[in-house]
Figure 1 (cartoon, helix red, strand yellow):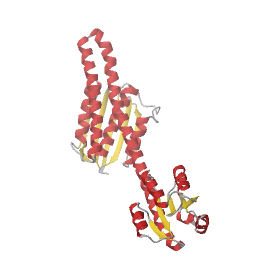
Figure 2 (figure 1 turned 180 degrees about the horizontal axis):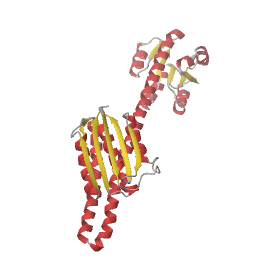
Figure 3 (figure 1 turned 90 degrees about the horizontal axis):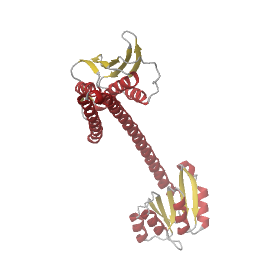
Figure 4 (figure 1 turned 90 degrees about the vertical axis):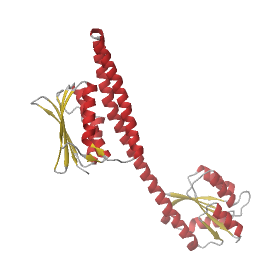
Length: 336
């Protein structure tokens, strides 16, 4: 798991130290050997070394010079110094170079092992912390990717609809065509603003969000900019929730409207929000082509399911016969 380099100009000391200690019990599985400082530095530059045990007084390059070079090159290596001479100057330099320990020869194994155990524990903690940081970073990258998909999907779908309409209207009704072009510009500006707001939310941290007000504002913009009809109903009229919770609900509705327009050709939507029995229930019906399961694995729907299920909620997407269309249902535990 970890690697060690043992350096001493007395070869028999290197061989003895490498062979007499059960290093694998301390999660050290690779042992490298060097017999002078320059040879050790070459190994350090070529191999991934975690622990260095080095003599101080050696020809060509001392152990102190070796560690100083390692520090200058910003290599993260835990270092232990060995010496046959009790000299305060050596100890002072060892402290300045952030050596883990400074031991006098002949070194007994019971003197060395506590330092090795502490190093192994520290390396393990560092590895766990790095793994957790990578997990958090990966989660953040995935979340940002989902946010961008939702924001851009809605913005671009609505803009495309307006541009197509503008192309047809400009020839017959210039004023109406120009109005559609202006709506397209507004959509793009709104999309950019939403992205900036998302970034600002990440920078500022968690602040409570009024869910109903956010949904009302989004639905009003969607109806105006996408050129569709949206009838909405809210019970209750206000609900203050965690911002991530609100974003999950908002993006789900956004994805539902985007897919209804893009895949179903929908022009009319019915939206309802209910809060009862500790759950928020959202339903979004559209009059487009009934859902046939073909987009089950779409990126947007998959991201929606992932977000909602992360809150302990559920997503249901079905077709309806009377009236014909598609129905999206979300259930989210309130205040999860």
